[in-house]
Length: 383
Image 1 (cartoon, rainbow, N blue to C red):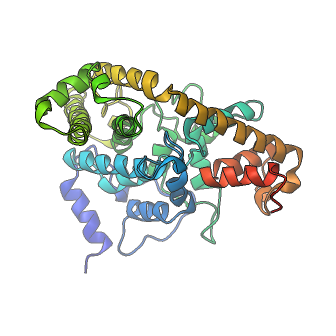
Image 2 (image 1 turned 180 degrees about the horizontal axis):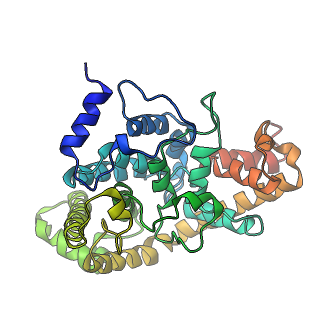
């Protein structure tokens, strides 16, 4: 039977020098005995998948509110797509697939309901109370919120996975660290495993926002021809012979393939140029190692601008975003003014009232937030 030692020996033989090895992990905040069959990063992955915060991603908005249709991406389907790309890239670069997978699976657990509209609403309400930022909230989720295990709060994940959550942002600044991120401030960049999660996250949401935008009728294939990257990649399939559904599918697939391959080439070139021969060398590199090339970043920027002007600014999406902000703002003010409305246990987290309310709201799904709003403000509902 395969043992944990067999796994660690396989890591030593197969992983590149710059990959993070499970046996070299900086460990957990609350020490635990190692599992006899699984590495530390495998245990992290499994704890994430079985957590309530991960399950709730199924009913949290990506762009379209869940009830608008069963086809559109949610935070969960986006997470699974980003994780699939991450594993492929990790294997190609000989990185630690289990660590990369764990970071990819957990990277969105700090997002509130209603996508970016929900985050904007909580940022506004918490501006005078310490602010709100989804990476920091993600760290709160895995470190403090919920206690599924008797010996410690949160999930007690390894330092390397928690680093991936904290640094899942291009705005991470070692010069202006919030106290919760202080332990990660020694270097600007995270592990290469975390870096490919950031790259694959962006690749996945660009591609699926094109897909969902086409399906929702917010954009057309003809409009996409104005985007140079789409026009070049989709033109390779011979447009005349394809149905619209085939053209959409092959175009989205080509977008993903081109960008993933670009990250792989860029990472390989920078690893060689910068002499990256260890995980810490990647953290101390002069720039991000695993990212899109400058040329692809420029072309990807054109696609992002197209999506911003034609999908995210569409009146249907804007209506949803404004409605979502009103729902969360109303809930926040009502709970802060009358905290007796909060469910039992919310106020026992040893934080001030606004932060406790914020933690509660950020943990709701779209459906839960809408149901709470009806319970509080619809006079015909008594429960």
